[in-house]
Length: 107
Image (cartoon, rainbow, N blue to C red; front, side, top):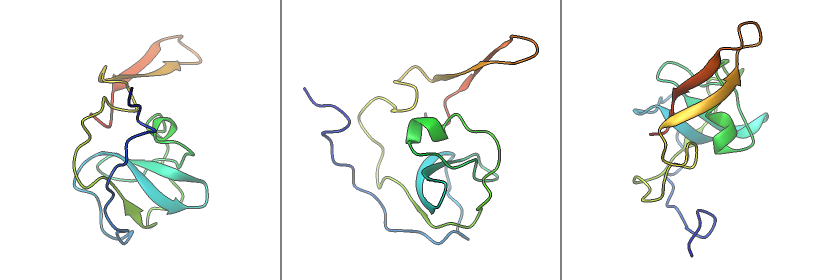
């Protein structure tokens, strides 16, 4: 059985932080607050220790110009963020108890 931990992904080289990704999603970044951040199309969201955790962040990162890298080609594995479901559960709103469901930023 092959798991995502057993698969070697080919990564791009490090890209200057002033260059923005073409696609929304989680990327590895050289930041002090974590190793991963989600590019939302306009800005980098908060940094996190894992790609899955980065996909749940919605507050802008303090460092918008850190270098980054991503996969050289799409992965054949199900999305690590949502498991292939295309939806991310971000819990419930504190005041209204409304479910905070959203589209996966990596699919």
